[in-house]
Amino acid sequence: MIVDSHAHYDDEQFDTDRADVLKRIQEQDIVRVVNPASNLSSARKCIELSEAYDFVYCAVGIHPHDSQEYSQQSLEIIRKMAEHKKVVAIGEIGLDYHYDFSPRDVQKQCFAAHIQLALQLELPLIIHNRESHKDILDIIKAEKGYNAGGVFHCFTGSVEMAKEVLDMGFYIALGGAVTFKNAKRPVDVAKYVPIDRLLVETDSPYMAPVPYRGKRNDSGYLSEIIQKISEIRNTDFNDIAMNTTQNANRLFGLNL
Ligand code: NI
Image (cartoon, rainbow, N blue to C red; front, side, top):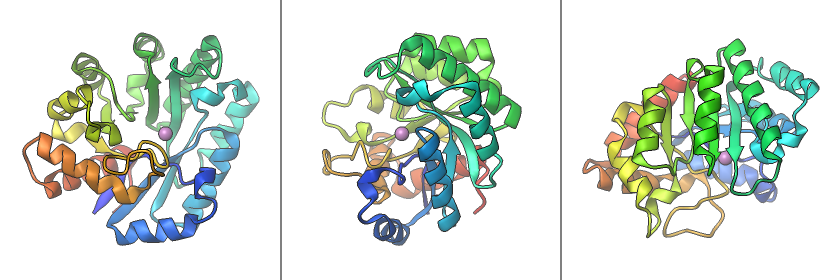
């Protein structure tokens, strides 16, 4: 029993074979998938997927890449969508200073507004952070985002950053990066995170783990990530699978 805490099956890369992939991954022991949205139209697709597939849950929100879509109006649409019973989080939201697809001040406003929404709706946050460590922590503190709780997805920060995030009560999700040949930080973090605060994810269709790096990713490859983490932590596959599944169920209120 494995939960993929972050995958994007609404992505167009699955347009030709989505149903096949979703059927196959269930046969590969994936019992739950949390599918975060990236913008409004993606959020609609995510909800449709969660309606069509019992084992798919979703999050709604505007990704930093798309934060130019953010307005009072779009936030109200997100609020309405979040009432759906399969919506278990607000996400994915955050800051991305690597690509800077949206101006930074717009990204910051969009992120802060989503934190306020999550607090009002009592939903956890799914946070995307790329090269924006200081600002992301500053905004979370200013908006009291730690009261909403949530997860730092695809965590690639240092152990020091992990400590700060864990001290605020957040979970840390590790993905394909932990398997990469030159992975140093994710490996250190995989050792460091307490077992009851760790999640696993694929971020499909991106970030496929070794030995599939560069290919389209899907939740079937999550076992490679769990295997690697279990080696790093000197434990067995089932220990990581069981604990990360329990953690995802607790954070997102999934029923199993
Ligand atoms: Ni993502």
